[in-house]
Image 1 (cartoon, rainbow, N blue to C red):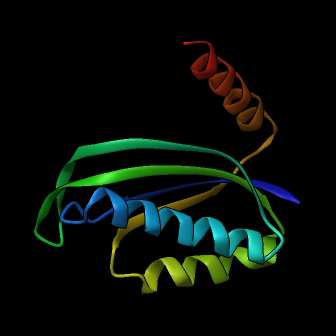
Image 2 (tube, one colour; image 1 turned 45 degrees about the vertical axis):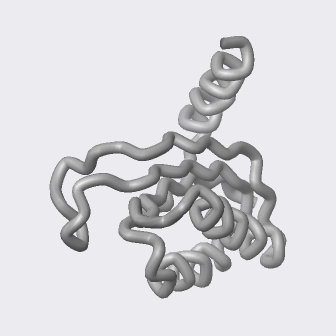
Length: 111
């Protein structure tokens, strides 16, 4: 299984509960397709560099997970279909990226 990192921007007009539901939906989708969520970070409401769908801010969320490579396209199709998701980026993590992410997680736990 490969390591992946996905960052997505959620529409800012949603409530906190709706944002949580959106994140849980995609965590459940990953786990249903034999993926395993390793780490999750809520970066909160942030200003965008440029307007997306006439919005100037969005809720950023990061998911780090392990999954078979063939499910990534299915997950990305679901991200595209969900109108609550404004943008997303999924990246396959190499060995150095995985080590850096582990250090970052330890640093966040100690802070």
